[in-house]
Image (tube, rainbow, N blue to C red):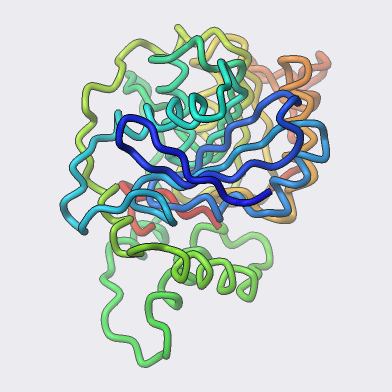
Length: 316
């Protein structure tokens, strides 16, 4: 299907649907600072072929959605949460299964807290609890911190922006698996070429929260699946465990040696888990927050799959 521009309350967002509109709807929420291209076409088609109506969209200041001057966004993080509702309204969908990655997973949590009636289930990938708690979580890895703390500087390469983003994607991949630089470079190049103003994505780095909900994650009642790579350098694996522990009944699917984001090597496993979760309300191969698998056996280790910690939007 072709891209579709939608407009609600004066906000224009670029969306793209896949599959049969009569099928159960799945809304994909990318990390802040990242366009919908990071939900790659092949991944979306796999979900659609599994009998889901899939919608991805560009956040404000990414891709072809409404774009503001760098440093002057004029909106808040709460508006990004409401944008998900705007997309559902445009497609006349009362409620959808919501899949969020990285900061998009945080937006998905806040959507479930503030607009509970619009969410049928949650799948939270490579993310962390969106509501502060008293649990101490490990910081990003030293390599990640070193990269995001070092200015890009001058580069002799022909495409310094692309080169820097590829280097960032390599760090996010976690270092335990082969890194597909060719695929990363192609995706980043298309993302830059497609954007109204690629620099505007940095507006997401310092958005005010705009009055985001502060209810505890324990108040989320929809079925929730947490998917997390064991080599995630931005949100170490303990973040995924903590998230599953805080949401009642949540299940955890660990991705051995996966980094931050939805890696192509894990598409089949992630898609199977999402299809199972959105069909029955539970994941077929996850672990509950008490560490047991959904089939009652021991700890599960299922297989499957920007610029700063405040800008966690470009998963590899």
